[in-house]
Image (cartoon, rainbow, N blue to C red; front, side, top):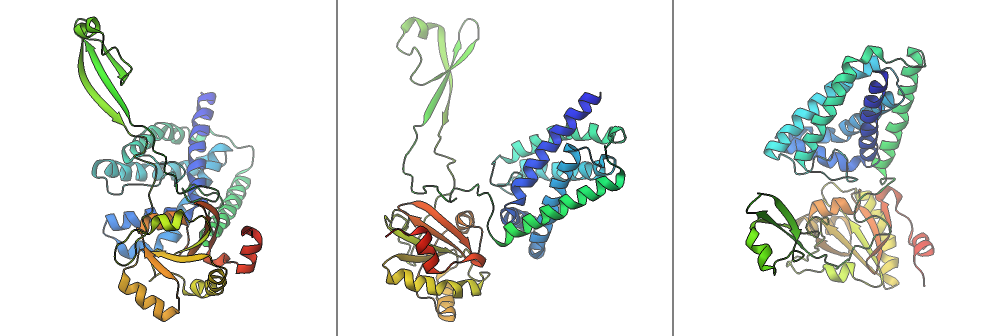
Length: 369
């Protein structure tokens, strides 16, 4: 039983550690998911609390993982573990049935799974968590109780600091398509795969083949087998969110932006009403020098044209604005505003508005004459 308890403890601890870590280093992504839930439950007035609740939840999740992995104070933390799993299992059940939020974000952007898969995962985890709760008094730490508490508190404080830093700047590890080094103007299309299923008329046996790799031209084989079903797998279907940048008339300017063979500066401000105005003022000197050197500098936002016009006048920004889907913009850079430097479709660098550099610094580090 001791071996079984250890296996259960380690398995749940690893899942919680992974889940808490990937959300903790990208807390703003989790804030977006939490906002989606508040909107789904018609609780928009809770949205200002999302950053605080996010930091609290990811810290609790990661601290539970440390408790389980290192056998610390499990007699007490098992209660938190059970209550947390009960809450999220119920929540994901409604997600699986009613699809309240398309992406629950339980593993952040590091691993995307469907709502049904999320609920199934939680049900399986409950099969491990309930025994851990029942056995909670049998776990023995090598440290005294005060040592367990002190170590867990230290971990919680340290992970809180890490999450707050990533919230105020950018994720330490970027799991999104627009991470530094990625090419975002890929045009390669993978082939669609067709699977066909045939059933033996005599035995009832069913076999699935990848079309056209089956004996369709064998008359003897066809006499004994009958077609029953077909399924299609399109590997291009879930390759991520695609940017479409439009001008005020709805014209698509995306190719001229992401296929620009020269250096391309993209300022992303998904919502101009909530963007940091000081960030815009800080970027103006860089914009002016970049334009003087002949480089393109644009702003992408999801705000409507009337709001763009008002913002440009009040903040004195002369660069071109294009509109794009807010969800796509949030995946490009976790900052409002944030700056991206491209060259020939490759992401060279990204900055949060708190970390904007001068043009001379950017040119010295990234721009090769």
